[in-house]
Image (cartoon, helix red, strand yellow):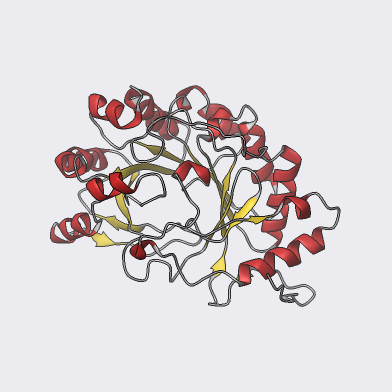
Length: 338
């Protein structure tokens, strides 16, 4: 890759920007590929590490990485996996991110397996926002999809997050043709009573799940049309927000967000970069390959790391190729954290 000199004038705080004038203030940082769920659309046979697996980033490397991104305009970090709570040092990772100058918000995405036993510690470490997951609100179906009877633990996690004063609580659910529309009334009832943002996420095709995608993909437009017909209003996008289009209704306490990567112009206002648990920078979730940051992280020359980041981000492509059924190098979503 040819590197371009993107140095900034003295005293100017740079922001990572690509050749399409998109500015990147949001980093999704995976801290492990391992996951303890067996979701039908991701790891139906469970996580199986192979001999090619690279070591996870150390605390020192995470600190250097966080400082470099913050110095280049990153303001929000979402910690992902795999399942990030499998790392015993997760609270310290949260603390490192939160204490980094320039980082305004630290969020965590978890499957909720044991979040009710850990959330107070994460909150004390500086966690600002929480995303949990429930692809069904019916315990037997939840177990069928995820491989675990843990719906009650997820719901306890939502309750605890509210008790601990989290202002940003989200519940992710992947849209599945066989299940989601049947449960839509139950999901709507949940949002009517709870101050959460429910995120309906379109199923995305990956290298290992092409046949599952063909059988289960459901467009978010179906949900969007119903929301509009029922008087839901689209909300303005918040600074450093993710890709969800969010809606509110005066009769509902919570909100609904739609993440529709197959929709037109989905990538136009992309503001997100991803780093895998082994230090690979992915300019897109569905890029053909990652860019190894580890050598630069372990050099005692932060200026060189900053310049390298700005150069490689400048080369980000216009968008993904999901509509051409090209999911790049991603074999399952736990690889990079979605």
